[in-house]
Image 1 (cartoon, rainbow, N blue to C red):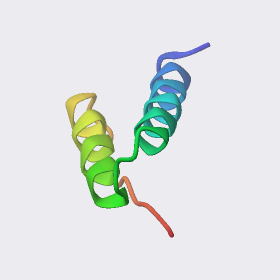
Image 2 (cartoon, one colour; image 1 turned 120 degrees about the horizontal axis):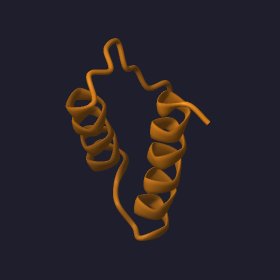
Image 3 (cartoon, rainbow, N blue to C red; image 1 turned 90 degrees about the vertical axis):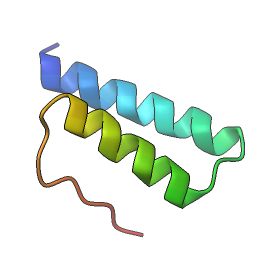
Length: 48
């Protein structure tokens, strides 16, 4: 598994745990943006 796949897998599991714990979508999106920014990902978008 390459680095990007590991990062995406982490973000998906992290997001799921946040939602199950009751986090709202705005909080979740903000957290994912920060994670992506920390790892140099660009053009991250959410669709609802």
